[in-house]
Structures are given as C-alpha cells and as structure tokens.
Length: 363
Image (tube, rainbow, N blue to C red; front, side, top):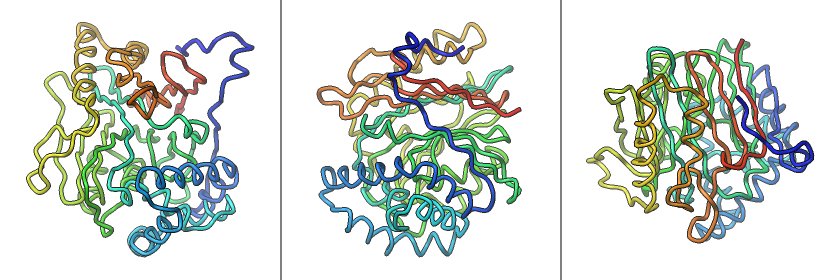
C-alpha cells in the first residue's frame, strides 16, 4: 500500500523520483544514465564540490586528482566493466571522467568524514525475506536521487533496480535474482586504493546471483574503506562490517534478523574500535530492534516495517531523521524490499511526510 502523499495539488508541488532505464554494454548503460540524468549528475558534482570543501577542506581539483591518481588505474585494471560504465556516465553527462570517478570513490577520499546516518534491517521468516532502510544524507542531495533500472542481459548478469545518487553506479536496491543490499556509513580512518571502493562494492552485490556469491566476491577483493553492507536474498541476510584492513560479519539472530546503524557492532582486531561519531547511532540500532520486537507475534508485512521507519523518537537523531540543530542530515528515502517476492516500495523524503512513492518489481 502506497503512503498518503497529500492532495493532488500538494502532490504536484512535491519533488518526484526520476526513473531511468538503461541497457546494453557497460558503456551504453553508463551513457544512458549520464545523458538522461545530465542535470542531476552536474548537481551531484556541485554538491560534493561544496561538501568536500566544507568537511574535508579540499577543493574539487584536489579530489579529482586523488581519484585519478590513486583509484582510476586500479579500477581500470581490476574492474574494467565498471570503468567503462563510469566513462559512459561521464560522456553522457558531458563531464570529465575524473568527476565521475571522484563521486564514486568519495567515501574513500574522505575516510568517512561525511556524516550521514542510516538505519537498516534484514528479517527472514518462513514467508518473506525483508531488507529495508532509511537512507539519510544532506537534504540538498535529495533532488539528485534517481531510480535506475539496469538491464544487463547482454552480459548475462541480473537486471538491477536501485536508488542512487546521479552519477554513482552502485547504491541501494535489489536485482532479478532477489539479491538486495543496504548501506550504513562507518567513520573509521584509512583507505586502501588496491581494494574495491565502497560504492562499487554495492554494485558488485547487485551483479550477484545470490547472497553467498556476493559475499565471496567481496571477500576476494576486499573493500577499500569503512562501511557496513547489509546483504540479503530469499534465504536471509548478513551484515558485512568493512574497514580498509578487515571485515567482520553480523549474522542473523534467532529470529532471522540483522539490525545496523552507523557504528561497528563487532570487534575489529586489526583496526580497533571506531569513533561511534553519531551519538544517536547506538540509540537507533537498539530502537529499531525494540520496534521490530513488537511485530514478532505475527508475520511482519512491508506496511508494518514501513511504520517502523517512521519512528521519530530521539529526534532529530531518530530512525526517521530530521536535518535540524546538531543533525546535518535527514532521511532522503526509505526502501522496503521483499526479496522472496522480488519487489520493493520506495518512498522519497521522510517516511512521516513523503514526497513520492515508487514500486520496484520484477515480473
């Protein structure tokens, strides 16, 4: 059931989530993405130009140089199909390849300095396998989100449906095989350019035929910087807590659940504890577990889980986050995936006051 979006007049005034369908070779997929989202890609570059300057004290020329010196050669050698897709995005959007590489490795360049705050869950039951999250970031970037459908049949890879920032080739969503992925930022210094950048890692998950295959692929390459990926399919979910040096796993509990926010839940002997930089991160992971606990007597539904993500307890640092006071980000979208059914509901904006709703589904 779609959330209430207001009267017809109110709906016309609210932002909409741009939908783009891409197919063909990696370059062709990228070119379609870039050309159809040209304005959003340009605004994404503008957004991160300002964000790097304000947060990391780096100008965009420095960011581009680091991206091209440290990451572009490795991506071109190890994952040439991703390089080709990013080249296509750049040419379609009429921007430099360095701009697109920089946006796709932004997490690695800042060592996690960008302070988004997301809350996620995976829940496997006899009837369903849910994967859901609120993705929180600066409100200025909401207008640059796009819904990408990527038909990769030419490469014999699953078709992907994901929500991403325009210009980024990997983000949050699901694929035709019923594999889904969510992301939580972790603030731990260190990056290894020889390993797979975080957002390309998310894409690798969505290129996979199963949760187990995705985990094997990621473990083979390692992820370049700190983050948490919550990966699930019809058989259940697993959390992978990455640093630039190791990975630790968050397995399903007795109820088939995994919960996560923005700090390490496992010990990382090779790196030590993280900074737990958002004081509300501990609260949110405990709160979502508490709210889910209220649903365990019956089979959870997508509608019931969506209600969980409306929770404003501890605002502004709530599950449904508000950009106010000390909180520099807000919930920009919610996604609730049912991976057995291979469908997802996406709500643009804060779930308590949504701007748009889109259903992602495979026949």
